[in-house]
Image (cartoon, rainbow, N blue to C red; front, side):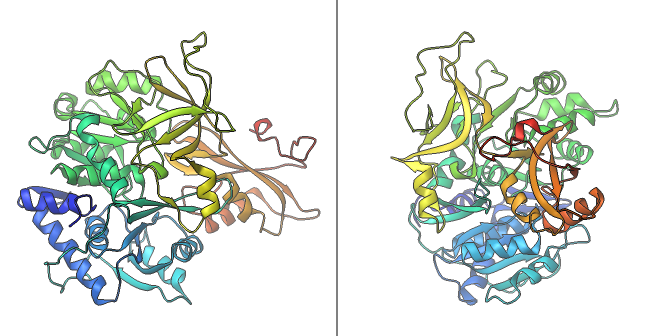
Amino acid sequence: MTERHLAGLLESSAETYPERTAVVFGDSRLTYAQVNGAANQVANLLVERGVKPGDKVALSCPNLPFFPFIYFGILKAGATVVPLNVLLKAREVAYHLKDSGAVAYFAFEGTAELPIGDTAREAIDGTDVDLVAFTAGPTPWAQQSPVFETVERDADDTAVILYTSGTTGQPKGAELSHGNMHHVALSGETMYDADADHPDTYLCVLPLFHAFGQQVIQNAAFAFGGTMVLLPRFDAESAIQLMLREKVTFFAGVPTMYWGLLGALTPEVPITELAANLRVASSGGAALPVEVHKNFRERFGVTILEGYGLSETSGIASFSVFGDEPRVGTVGKPIAGVEMKLINDDWSDVPTGDLQEDGQSAIGEIAIKGPNILKSYHGRPEATAEAIRDGWFRSGDLAKKSDDGYYSIVDRSKDMIIRGGYNVYPRELEEVLMTHPAISLVAVIGVPHESHGEEIKAVVVTEPGAEVTVDELVAWGREQFAGYKYPRLVELRDELPMTSTGKILKRELS
């Protein structure tokens, strides 16, 4: 097998540490040999169903042991994984399946809270996509052989397609190669001293369909023979109990999760025991408030390490320097093998030698180059050419750089909202909202929220004579969008502020 085949992360650990615990879920404890065997069964099922190397296979599954079984099974069969957000509605799933060209779709049948199976059936209606629905009972691959010879793939072949929205409205699929994903997963050695001889126990509360959870938790854990403790939905009290029970040494989350953990520290929680176990705490997705930094270090004895990345950078581009004095408010330096710089709109470099009064460079857009950069946007050569030039990927995020190389995010040049760690792009929502018969014009913005960071708000101008209430529009939006991105706040106005050229002035909305 190719040295940088992504499935090799699991296979190598299964060969070296077959009896070491790989996954914990509830009372279930699965060894590396068991996880690898289950992935082999999935691969055998795919081959039996006619899936060929290079085919795209979609996956909708919460943080359950099924996710790594199927994820690595798809890779072993030589196919490409297309992980989908479990909160997507049928219309959204159908778009992703069509855009990626998926030939098969694994969908967890779900529960009353996550009825993914029903959504999946509606999404594939009228298509040739092969649906593999599964539950906690006997799975469709249960009778397959646990032995499989992994299909050879080159390091440049596409391993995963991660969907990311954009200012053009429709989500785009970032094609990430085996080499891209493999490089970032192994970067844990330099980022936080990951060591297979002293493996970490990772609490996985980040969704595995997201680049952060996939790379920083699942793939990094398997790369270094660690243990992944799964929690399908983040609940601070449940997370703390798991951290105590499993002696968790590695926690990664978005700022709202750290806020929740601190709020759940009652006098009954043995904080000294938590602190004694925890070795690494990592945050990403949005800026972490200084007070949360300070309070977490005081209570847990660990400094939260902040990082920065996008789906297009295989999840990570920069990270706090492990062992250095913490630089609160920065996202660290580029990870090993990666370069970053600041550019202007015309791609010219922003001078970083001429420092401002605050000791920082002038503001520029972050550009990134290295083995973590996506191959392309699937089926979108023009979008790819616009985003990548001479190997440099322009992020859309604005930052400053200190004289010793630390980057600080100051703003987003892309029209994006970050709600609870999830990226939400207003243009996508606006295009759908405009299809409502009562809406004449709409602007979607983010407004500050205590626990989510930002909440989504739609400012609406209705059609003349239309009668519609705020509650009706909120309910309609809930039907159209995934739970994390429908506008929970709606304001009705007679008009929206605009420039002389007719561009909506979103900065004047709140």
